[in-house]
Amino acid sequence: MDLDELYRLLRISHVQAQGIVDTIRDPLLVLAGDLTVISANPAFYRAFATDRDSTIGLPLYELGNGQWNIDELRLLLERVIPHSASVFDYEVQAMFPGVGPRTMLVSAQRLIHPDNSQRVLLLTIVDETTRRRKEEEKNILIGELDHRIKNLLSVTQALARQTETAGRTAEEYRDAFLGRFEALARSLDVSSRESAARLPDLVRAVMEPYLAEGTNVSVAEAPSVALRPAHAMSLGMILHELATNAAKYGALSVPEGRVSIEWELGTDEDGGPDIRLRWQERGGPRPLPPESVGFGTRMIRFAAEFELGGSVELDYASEGFMALLSFPRPRS
View 1 (cartoon, rainbow, N blue to C red):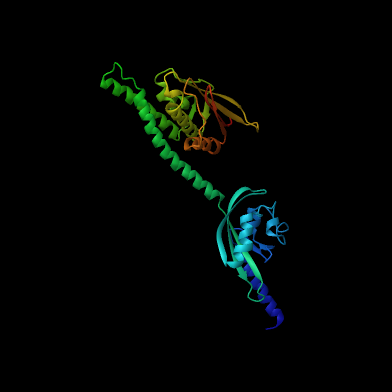
View 2: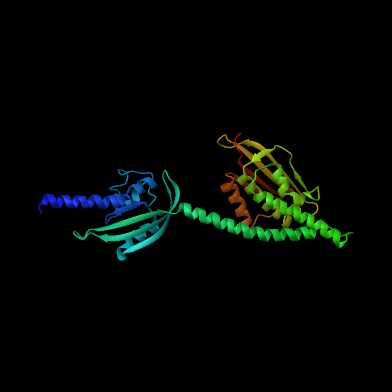
């Protein structure tokens, strides 16, 4: 075999190896001993919105806007890897230019070239952002289910306590209590089903257990707005949570307490149409900001921001608790 034939075989082997690397779905980097990038696969360029000229030949810590210049990662690559053959799934959280915030799992494998003993480092990167987000959503849903079961028991107890007993027979008390309980069940059904709803119909359905007495809750009559099914369910969850808290700690926990719910149509910062709903309590115990953020508050914020695509402000003013919810409405 002459040198030309040997060169041809080596080149074929190199092309085949590079072709295999290029088909790997996860981003991959090959680093020299000084952590300069020797090679990168197309998945890396796509994942981090960069190109070959902005990657090859540069130190890892200078890529992009320096997002890989993380103390824990430097310690891993400069001190742990030289004394260990590999490290798997090291978590990196950073803001990547052109991509946004990401959670990455970095695995590092130390290799030695069999011919020249050159040390190289193979980095593989797995984007865990979407999976972590889905896990968070799942945990929120599971926690919300557990929380709503506990709240349902609390509200049921409150309904039992608030149902008048004076001057009533046992049968009359039973009928009054079961009527309010059935109204509560109907409100939960409206806030959970997939059918569309309109304001104020949805608000009145969710608040029906508290409207039964007629005077302590007021709901605006207009404007009437059609809601997407997902929006109706999320808004129902928020209203139910606010009502539960009001019945346990706020204006609905005392006879003289009052709650008003009203909304208006406006435009958001981008000029798109939105809905601004105000929950205002009066006459109840003086509200106190919670010492820590409980699940109810986290659920309200999660539903408002991620499910409704809007925002919520919670104000514990001395004159009464207020919640201001803003979210986009369907474009006509």
